[in-house]
Length: 233
Image (cartoon, rainbow, N blue to C red; front, side, top):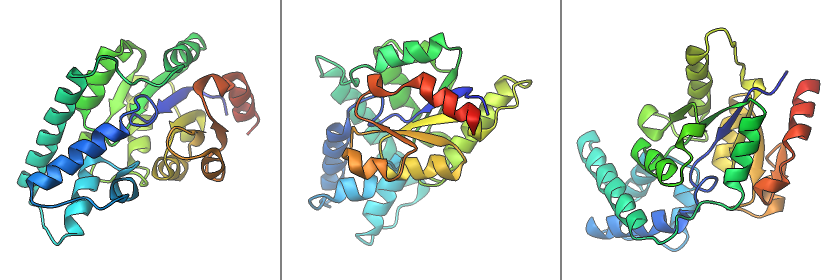
């Protein structure tokens, strides 16, 4: 199969904002008279949607959330995220990302974002980073009921790309996912999509066991080689 599209995760792939999210979730929990345990954010939330993260943290403490109250918590988190970004002098976009995106664009491949983050956060970062025009579409946590490691987000991205380009007949095997977490890698593979894992969140040897390709930096990812191997598969 020929490679036709590159699907990017967001948190941990496009923007280095894990610490920001952990601070916001910690504060949100404190406002609800709850507290994060050491290491719990990474255990529960990495690679998962904001919705799944908050639900699991509250469930662990015997707190049931109605959909209305959960939506309020998600809105509070999104507002806090925007405020935090506004306070930064420099947006923590990963080095080499813009050049890699330009390389992908020069090959004629389509690009999309597939993430459990809320759409407002994704759109804000892409706009501030000057990257928004590079992506055909965004599949966000708002669009999904199931979080990674379920494949729903990636399957929806393929479906929507085919809706946009009806003569394209895009298949999951013609896509490459860029992921940094175990949950994200699992989601892409369940969807039948090959994965390039970047070691932004976990060390090389841990990502290497799960992804089809593993790189430390975007400029290490040989897109020509990936395209060649996809053609042979």
